[in-house]
Amino acid sequence: MIRPGLARACTAMLRRDLTLAWRRRGDIAMPVLYALIVTMLFPFALGPEDTLLQRIAGGVILVTVLLSMLLALDVLFSSDIEDGSLEQLVLAPQPLALMLGMKILAHWITTALPLIVATPLLAAMLHLPAAVIPVLLLALLLATPLLSLFGAVLVALTAGTRRSGMLLALMLLPLCVPAVIFAAGAVAAAQQGLPWLAPIVWLAAALVLAVALGPLACAAALRIALDA
Amino acid sequence: MTVAATATPLLEARALSFHRQDEPVFAPLSFQLTAGELALVEGDNGSGKTTLLRILAGLLHVGGGELLWRGQPMQRDSCAGDILFLGHQLGLKADLTPRENLQIAAGLHGRHPAKTFASVLADIGLRGYEDEPIRRLSAGQKKRAALARLLLLPATLWLLDEPYANLDRVGISLVNRLLETHTAEGGAALVTSHGAVSFHGGEPRHIRMQA
Image 1: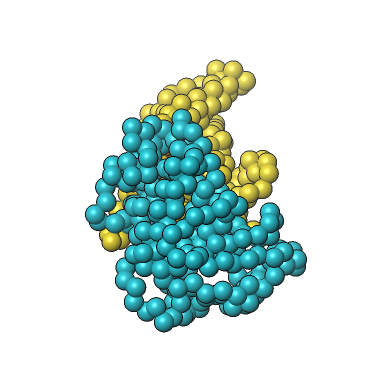
Image 2: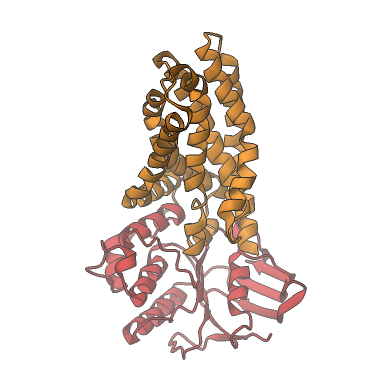
């Protein structure tokens, strides 16, 4: 018999989730469209005044991206629980945390990456200076996986409860406060011409911690969810 | 897979019990299963057949009593990959084809080197449906797509919850044939079923569940 190595199992898992997302590629566009529409509302609500929009642009984009990611988060494990794929995954001779890490990575690629790609467009809509956009993108590249990992742990914890979407939002948003503060801090510092590296490094440190612990917490929570 | 170590049973339960909110789900259960044996789990609706299979698969915690795997207390790491569980939920992705579903299962569990995806799907009766999304298949065909895992993945113990459900007469005899080949090769299987099972590889062991 051929026992698959870790690399092959990880590839199989990643490929499965990316294929599934590709089969339903309409769903990938939804968070991006949502972010575009929300960002578009701000100039309408506040008036097209350049200085005001520039000042709030960084924060608005960060919060919008966060809310857009939240839209797609609650389905992260639910379909796998419903069709029994999760049981099969738990019983596979592979480390569950690593396999869930692959699922979270696939989820980040299909929800957060399109949002990051659309960010320059959002920034242009709010007249954010072009020089600040690289800092904003860097902050998002670090903050969005952090949110995916936080979110995954909470989705795993609320798995099996009814109407978990609302509960998830209430639990996740307070946890996101530090990530939003550091990411927005970096963007604001860059806008004022101040050094912006320190908050970015804090985000990176938090991400390293979340990458190490998030999947383990997910695995434990989902085992408990199946045991109930 | 060899028939070695027949002295120690593959799986042994000693006064196994399980509680849900302090209510026992089934009366303490003791049985042994050696390599090459088939056990039929019998009981009325709600007698805990599915619960028993989920405990044996390691999805539920043992409530009381002992569960031994090859003579050692059963642990997740010692039996991972040696047990194949097929539950009510088939574990198939509806947007993927039978072939893609098998590829994922093989990527996670490994597979018999001699078998190909195409040959396994042909043997299970899904020739011509290999690349059709699962959602477009009938209930019986979905069941067959899930049963294809039995042919492809290497596992000693099969835990099959209602493997005959939704299958036509040809499908039922196919499952019986799978079970006969598996036990003849030194594997073991625990099967829950309401329907009459015809098994030609010797008298199956009966495990009677009482609520």
